[in-house]
Length: 72
Image 1 (tube, rainbow, N blue to C red):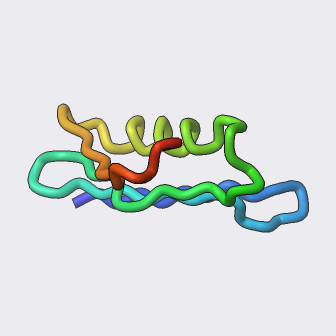
Image 2 (tube, rainbow, N blue to C red):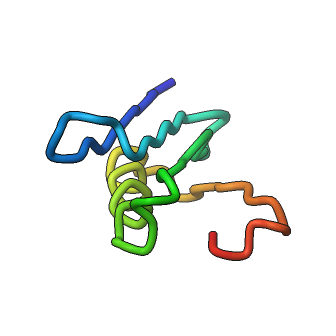
């Protein structure tokens, strides 16, 4: 199965976001995705999600999000 990992770093080389995805039983799964609170609302999460979508071209892509995670 395919595995993808991405990270976003700021101008100082500090990681401020990451995502990982994997092909599981014919579907793409976004296993984890996060952006540091100080760097949210800048499109980083969307860019990470789109990178995973492009790298996991299965017909079904899944992402589980807690109901309490309203911004997601």
